[in-house]
Image (cartoon, rainbow, N blue to C red; front, side, top):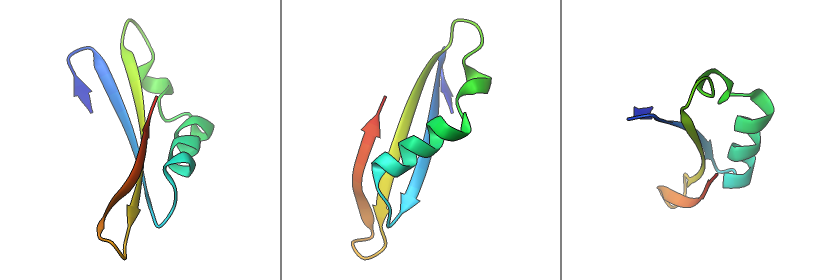
Length: 61
């Protein structure tokens, strides 16, 4: 998702952790296509609980 000159890369883990989601963004290079030029890239890992039916944690880098 883009807002202005910033690209936001999200990964959602259901019944996982926000750290696992962020690690997946980094290990798979999801942000690489957006790093060209002067774009700022924000990575967001999100954990969602099926039991709570809600976001339980998130990490932003």
